[in-house]
Image (cartoon, rainbow, N blue to C red):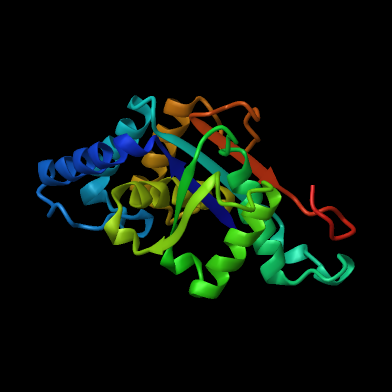
Length: 221
């Protein structure tokens, strides 16, 4: 399982989304065309590479990714009272916590496909705010589910998440591996300076990656 998100200063979000729409138009795509990892193809390879280049060219765009390895070996019964959903909330908070600075305020937007509706989002919001002792919503101002088609930065996050998943599902060396997807992974590696198969330093802010592994006894690393 791969979780991830892009974060940026609120006043710049509109400009980022608009510029990405201009990249779409450059390649003959409608401004409201939704791009994502599953749509990567040979014919649109250059378009996706330019999106990756744009992300790495902007100092105020940041990515944090979490790869949960060996998820199938988890035994939730070994952790008192933990359900799969509770583990999911823990993973989501583990992904998000490196982003937060208690001196700042945050609006968090989640792709609707990653949730089962409002109740799951409310629970995740509760877990995050409790972990931050943010009982008066001073840090987390908004926690909202949206369709990824509404936000270009969310679509860009999907591409980066998809690339991580592609690497960690060991798709790169397979006979039928997509050359376009391999090219995108290669570009991300070149631009980030990381292999994508190891943790980055905690203080890494541009492309931060954490590989989570369950311990043998079912607990998490």
